[in-house]
Each structure stands twice: as structure tokens, then as C-alpha cells.
Length: 298
Image 1 (spheres, rainbow, N blue to C red):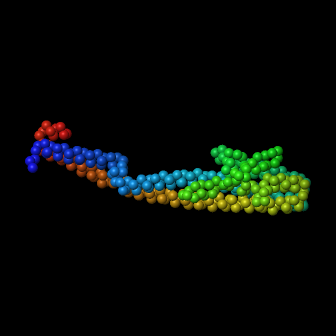
Image 2 (cartoon, rainbow, N blue to C red):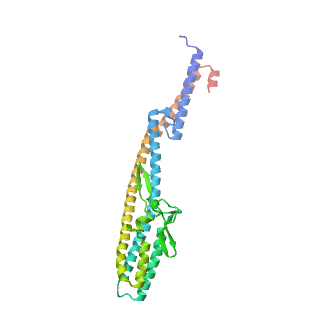
Image 3 (tube, rainbow, N blue to C red):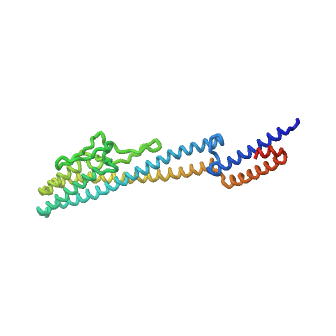
């Protein structure tokens, strides 16, 4: 086969073009920090990294949801601890009121403090976060309790007595507390109704009614304690899940970097070598091809 000047020129131009393309690829790899920028660069590893990135987006969404839920649990925990303290104080005052040594004035002061504690519980029942009532169940836009004259009534309908849930990995984690969980006994009495009777009994000195309502008060206190423990348990579980998801995301990120990340020291070395190769190719071609053609190539 006869080698013509045209064949030499075309071959030289192709080699120089390939070298320039390789140099461009290495420059992009260094500037982006990625060895794979499109699926065609490495279909297998690109597919693996795409799956892991999709998985990380899902897990980061779960992590954000967990953080938001745990912030709500802080409000539940604070409110329930406050209710626990208030109910303990109500019980102390009730025991005092049942004492025969109490004077009429003493009973009046006890009844007055019980009224203040009732008002405090009323405000706790209507605790809000961002305009939503945390004890409202499925009706977070409706105050859980309302007043009719001096009587406090549960405002949340029974069908809305649904605890809030957090969907994570195909399961629903129940974390909410409703007004029915901590302001109402299993027998249907409300803490406000119990307090109204205790206030009247304290003022009238009816010890028999006071002793009867102590049992109902204990029922409310037990429900508060149980829900406080449940909130703490859910928070611990969510904290554990949050840490586990964060660890998985970190591991996935490391794998993604191994799959598509650039080896910068190697890329820099290859770029330097490619630059040297290109310069040598241009110099060699200048010696083989006519001067006018080499000038055109440059």
C-alpha cells in the first residue's frame, strides 16, 4: 500500500484531535471531581451510583421528617411533664382538703388554687405549635377544649381521636397524644369535671366526695405518666433511627465517591502526561508534514 502525504496528514490530525479530546476529558474530571459525568462513561457504576443517590435522597427525607417529629415530641414531653406536676399538686391539695383540721378559710384558699390549676390545664390542653393544636388528634386546627361559662368541654370530636403517625420505611410510627389520652379517664370523666367536683367539695367540706374523686384523679395521673413514658420511648427509637439513617447515608456517599469520584492525583498526572504527549505530537508532525499544513493544524 502506498503511503501518501494525505494519509500521513489525516493520521496526524486524528491523533492530535484524540489527544486534545482526552485532555479536555481530564480537565473536566479535575474541575468536577467526577470520573463519571454521564451514564455512557461507565454504565454499570453509573447505575449503581444512581441507585445509591436515589436511596440517599429518600433517607435524607426520612431524617428531616424524624427531626421535625422529634421537635414536636419535645413539646409533648414539656406539656406532659407540666401536667404531671399540676396533677400532683391537685392531689396534694385534695388530700389537704380532706383533712378535718382545715378551716373554712383554708378550704377557700385550696379551692382558689384548684381553680387556678384548672385554668392552667385548660391552657395546656390547647397547646399549639405553628398554629396547630398538638392534642387535637386529627383536628389540629380546632382547639381540643373550650369553655362554656366555667365548664371546660372537650371540643375534639370522638372520630378525630387519632394519634399522629410518622410513615418510615413502610411502617407507621405512632407518636401523637390526644386530648382523650391525658384529659379523660377510661370511664369517660374529664380532668376538668373532676376538678369542678373537687372545688365544690373543698369549699363545702364534703370529705366523702373528695375521697371518691381521689381515685379518678389517680386515673388521670396514671394516664399522663403512661403517655409521658410512651413519648420518651418513641423519641429514643426515632433518635436511634436517625443515627442509623445518617450512618447509611455516609456509607452510601463514600461508595458513590468510590464509584464516580475522580482520582485527582492520577488525573493531574495524566493531564500533564497528555499535555506533554500533545506537544510532542505537534512537534513531530511539524517535522513530517509541510510547514503550511502544520501551521494550519496549530
